[in-house]
Length: 171
Image (tube, rainbow, N blue to C red; front, side):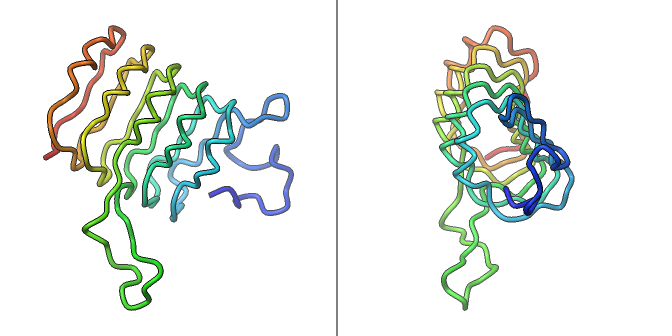
């Protein structure tokens, strides 16, 4: 995901905003990107905006995303996140591994500056982590059209700034 610019100076990459030699925003929405989000995303500790919606990203949301504590907007909607593909067994390459899936990492709750979180229209599964209630600035949470199970954590009721909540079409 980070080889978009080749040998170019990162300040010249399209969709990347740099301030004081630090990446603060990435907008690679609707770029037909595929593959997974690298665990190295966590080294971008000054990142405030990560917009990767409308691509073909698969796999898990890396737990290291929780290191991006300044993150205010994360939009990963309309991807294939949560879908895990076999890669080591050539007889199964490209086929979905239905036994493995990805959900929302609990570490995402460490991004307490988050105001907008959109993970809708993926294949994320599991339970919605209680740690999301640590995002006290959250105004918009869109996690509809996934495969989440269980009930919403009651601790989400503490998010007094939340005015938009989409959770429909889950299991």
